[in-house]
Length: 84
Image (cartoon, rainbow, N blue to C red; front, side, top):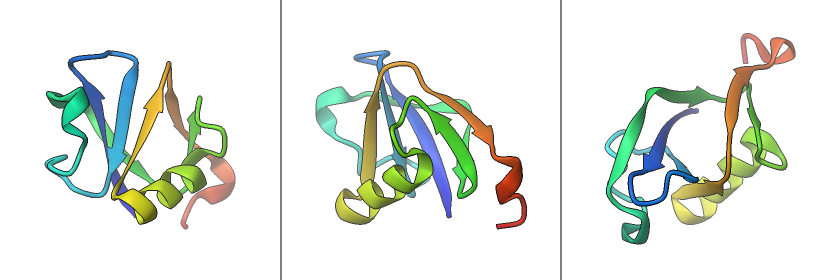
């Protein structure tokens, strides 16, 4: 699954993940949103700062259409997930 990563321009500590390329489904309370440079994540990425990484993000997206995270995040690719 390809996810798009946005940062709130209202609160720089708020990051959102969604499957919608334009971020049109993200909550208005944190708008405006900007797509982060290189702002895509695939299944198999490790998202530091999110308790269960991409699994938690995907669960939130399945439930709400998006996932909101607060605080500093880092995204890296797990070597054990290459090819998934």
